[in-house]
Amino acid sequence: MPESITPAVPPTPPVPLSALLAREDLALRRIAGPDDPSVVIHWAHTSEMADPYPYLLGGELLLTAGVHVPAADSRLAAYFDDYVSRIVAAGGAALGFGVAPVHDTVPPALVAACDAHGLPLLEVPPQTTFSGVARAVWQLMAQARLAELRRVTEAQQSLASAAARPDPVPSVLRRLARHLSGLAVLYGPDGTVLAGAGREPSEEIRTALADLTAVVRPTATPTPEPPAALPPTTAVGDGAEGGEGSAGGEGSAERPQPAEDRSAPAAVSASARSMPASNAGRASAAARPVPASATDAVGATHLAAYALGSGEGFVLGVATARREPGDHTIASVAAVLLSLLTGEHHSGAGAARSSALVRLLLGAPPEEVAPLLGDDSWVVVHARPEAQLPDAVAASALGAALGSPLVDLGHDVVRVLVPGGRVPPPQAGWTLGMSADVAPREWAAGDAQAARALARARATRTPLVRHGARPGLADLVARDDAEAHARTLLAPLAARPELAETLRNWLALHGSWDRTAVALDVHRNTVRQRIARCAALLDADLDDPDVRMELWFALRHG
Image (cartoon, rainbow, N blue to C red; front, side, top):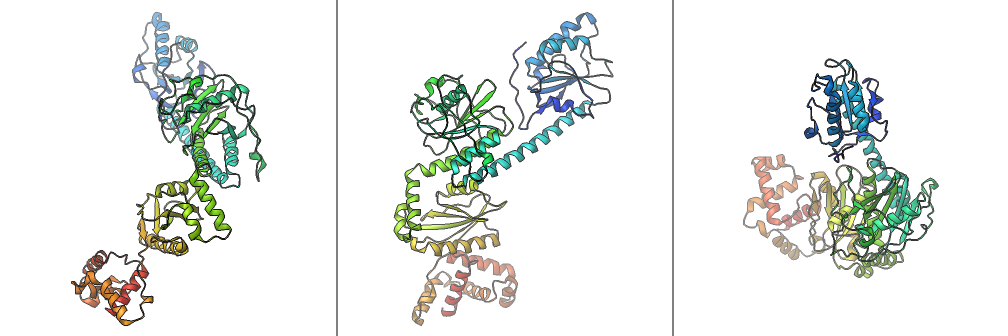
């Protein structure tokens, strides 16, 4: 049988041929070819070309009414043999032959050719149109895509919940093994097994999975001999998700390949096919490109390895008996969570943050533990997502975008403690409120400032609002001092008395454009322009009630 090409599949789950045959409204009947439940269809295509090869991408259910079939009976066997072989070579998944109006029955020579080349042949009855078959294929694809999205969403929520448990790494591995119905293993930078969960694999699978991790590990450390079995894991709370697995042993695996998954959110960074598994552990990152993930297979077992983003050499290994749509996406979510967990607990910065937390819990003042975090000035950021409540993955991603690992995930607000001196830009999909730069002893005040700034940002539908901290007039008791402060504060408006007068009326009328316009006998747009000019000259957020109060006292004393 000719070697078939790899189908260029669309970003939708394939449809099992058996599901299409089960549609009673189509009344399709398989009359030749293998009865293989693994046969899937990626799309339906109609063609009456004698050689459809140039027009196929692979994975199609090719539909034809036999218009191209020659009339000479003596040539039919050779014609159909060549016709079917070209479909198989193009990667076609199945052939559908329409009965009537051209042919009353499916030609026996076509049945024989499909049996010979292993191509499923479907009889399409007269009452079933080709467009109806194509519509059924897309309906089944839509149903499969919806089921895949639901599965991935449920798995993501489950994994995020596991990451928040007291034993986050074992919990994430247990949940991952349960969702994939397989084995999940976390390997350390030196290739040793740190934790695992799932079904007990064979020695061959343990060895192959351990070898596969060397392909994606960004270190030059050789892969040691894996242990005989995984350390036991104990479920917390729900024992159903627990279990034991193993990874290790001796032997060799086929050369692993980078992961290529239709549902993957990102492409593999480089190919790993050029390096045998036996040499992969001895090669340095500078000597070869390192892919983000790689796949292999041992018999019917699918293997995958994912380099964790912490950069410390940790690798997630997965082994499953079957490959379902969405498996790669689910494993990638687990890899992100494990990257955050391993990066937090195995770096110097993480140790310093842990030490600072312990000291705070034991009663040390913030200014005493602040040097452990590396900065004397800080900005408190309150953030709220625009679409839905925040989760652990989104909160960690926000912290990374703002340049700080100090993230607190609340019910509907994420708080981030950012080193001072930075002006973080607006973040897509988030509404942010920022405090002024505060010293560690003023963290609580900065938290209140950020909360107020977030409230203003949401009220005004502004992506980012920063608290405008200014010296308070409450400390200026003497009249002379108050007047001097007012002159300094309002100096940018000194040459434009109409701006100061407009600002005074606007504040007195609680920011009403219409009533201020009436009071000054000008158009409301003139009021808007003047207030905008005041905000620019004063470099102030006039939506901040603290700023309004200070300007009001300054205008009264100026």
